Image (tube, rainbow, N blue to C red; front, top):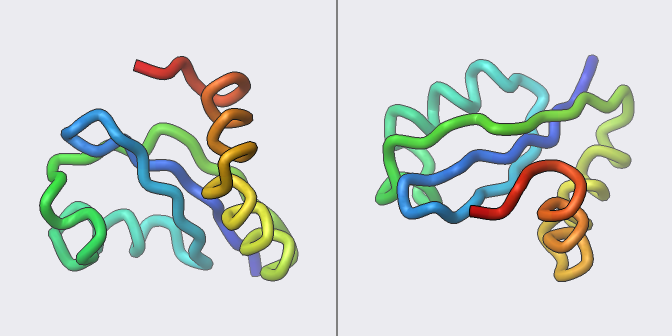
Length: 82
């Protein structure tokens, strides 16, 4: 089983970082407004994802991307900040 760390771009220009074992189902839940953290910011767009064979490494990387240095890494290496 693979685990996915993903970044969504919200309609307000901000980003949401998440982790899941089923990226297609999780993105569908976000898009339909079933996730409280993103519900008020529809429509949204999947702009980046990465897969990991280990759940703990995936969740650890998600936690890193949500940190200050992780946000800086994301802005510098994964996409241009808008």
